[in-house]
Length: 231
Image 1 (tube, one colour):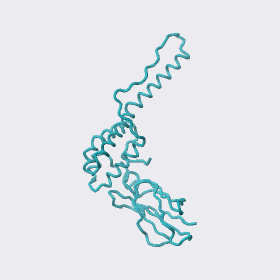
Image 2 (cartoon, rainbow, N blue to C red):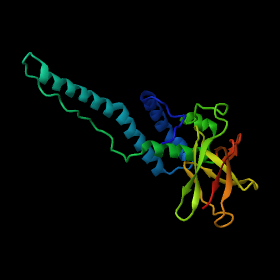
Image 3 (cartoon, one colour):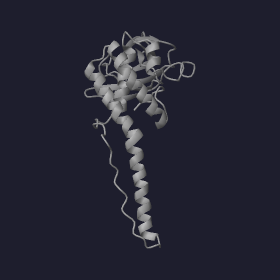
Image 4 (cartoon, rainbow, N blue to C red):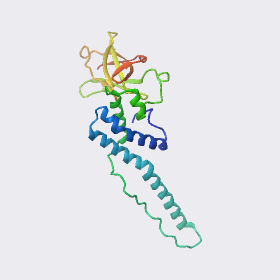
């Protein structure tokens, strides 16, 4: 799961963030074109995950501590008293369990929000989805390129770090030719699966990336990385 700069690092802060995002999502989600089913499913995800963090996990941890203390007392307490078994944890009206992968689904929804034509910085601020990193810290994407075996040919695997940006724009050139735009990539890895310019003849490919937010490439190009692709 990729790092998102707008998402808090501690569980206590995450509980607050999740509650705020959940409250704001129905209004902004509808305005940005998300369906009622998508919004309802995301709210259900957040409610369940927040309950896990805030209620279920602390209670289970406390119950485990009590069970360990009881076990040790039964083994070593010399008072010879009879202690009742610790009571099992019972939760009143727990939320309906949700499928695993709540955070990747949530982060994907946020990425789609930022690419919506109706998205603005004011909406991002209100939702709490504008990251704390700035372009002076990360003026361009960090990435790696490696040759990879595809289904029917060699390809290039590109992995990158977005540092809270919506996407990256990928450019490439081959054998010192002209630069061409390949893709806007929302998630990693991204694969360059173009066939060789000349069959069975290795070629040098170079890549450069820059940020892409709201479907618009901008900012400084990364340093160029190159590798040789071919049989």
